Length: 238
Image (cartoon, rainbow, N blue to C red):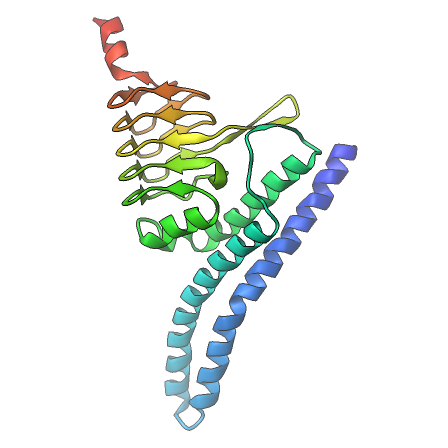
């Protein structure tokens, strides 16, 4: 009962935070639309509507960039960096985890699709605490716990891949870093669970599920559910 009440109150709090950051992020775009409407008063109604429609399109992208910056600033100001360890579900560590991921989720839900495979995705991951190397490619919005993620130079997170650094076990939140070394590739729809260490140039095949704490040697290929070395699987089958 106490846990359910806490979840309800905390959910309403997260809704409030979401409404605040979304509302504030809309403000610059609204000023732009207001200015367009005022300065096109001498034009015909059709032209005013056209200019307003174009302004609305621009305003959406202004909103998205503003949202990314605002969310990142909130994370920094309130020190929402995550730390490895175990946390009770009612602890401040768990609350901090929920707040950090809720902020990220707002961006993922409304704007992330527009920045995947662009420098803006790498920038946002860095602003949320991830270590992202040069020329890394991020093509998935299903990454969580970003301040516990390390992504090396030229590494790739493929489309719709899931990379998370947390698990829940016996009413406890467990946080573990995930390291993806340089030139490693996480394939389409693959799942990487907490504590994994993926070596340089390794490949996690499409649809593979890499279990918690798996250490993937450099230049190896892991596939299947649960994922294991493709070379070892072949030797077993031979």
